[in-house]
Length: 517
Image (cartoon, rainbow, N blue to C red):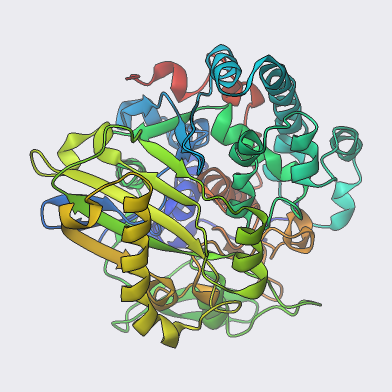
């Protein structure tokens, strides 16, 4: 593994999101002096927090899986996730609602899920689920240490016996076909393949290896931090400060001072310069490239994942059939992905994620009120409507989204809203996200593993990248890993994540310590 040469005593981390805070904690644990510089008024990055009246809103991810990866970062400074955050394991992890009126609770426990599938689709599908679960666990074991929790210096590193094991498992085939070998019911296949959208690729074109995301969602456990997802980066920032990090908020980095091939200081918007021996850059790639003064040349232009419209709604009521996380599937499926990734149309028959965080933490809303987060995937601004069109499109799309929710059983949703905020590709673009998407570069084969933008910067000896645009990719678990991988480039120490801590029934990791509800 290549590492940053020379002195690395003082490291500046640009960005206090999950990747930057993970990098900071791992660096602190290796004895580095760390300064974190964040343009916002508080930590979190994409996992931020805003207020709508008396409602506390998570502005980014709402699903937490693989919490042992966060625990690794805390453990680097002798702390623990369980000491800082109360985790609630969600049962069910999701509730899936289908266009035909059927409903499926997605459990991460094997027996509970097998029984639910037997009720929903019969004994043959329940047996198929058991085989699928075994395959997902094997897929996770084959990938985690070699292809996910790993720094790549060359594509030749793929030539390892683990690649043969992955191929033997069918991981180099197509995701939907491989899942179809276990499950014939098209509704069940959606539950175990929709995760391809996280990777920015339709299930019909995604590598089967990306079913590892389904493993995280449907096997390893889904958690909710009391206080909302923002409680995680807040706790990580507190742990970093207690371990000696200096954190500067409301401090935007506008430039980097260089001496030869090394960065010697970061320049803030107020003109102040902070000297450093190395720097970890976590903003989205366009901002990083602007700071560095150039973008690396690639044979083919980066393709970006679809974007999302999010409606945050504080309401005076809720709907009893909603679980904490809900998947609302339309009738269309293949056409939905075609619209999102090829034709650039808004979904004509949308599939939605509806999250109700007040189901487990009523303190996020005023007494008797409820918070709903509705995510509707949409094309990014390279494929679909450009940013300028969203100014007129946004209110119309909001109204059609509310009408669709009411058609799907959330009667009176629009009238119940007391506070709301609509997030569209306009807002993602304003934050510096390429193609108006918070999901960065899509996980096509040419943008995966050693072919993804590298976390070492060519031509700069002491700059390292972290975040969803670099290795290993998009999602809360992977950005936490990216912070660890960035720190390893500086310290030379990369301790592999223990596989057993993410396997069902294992005693290791925070799931064994956290208080469950």
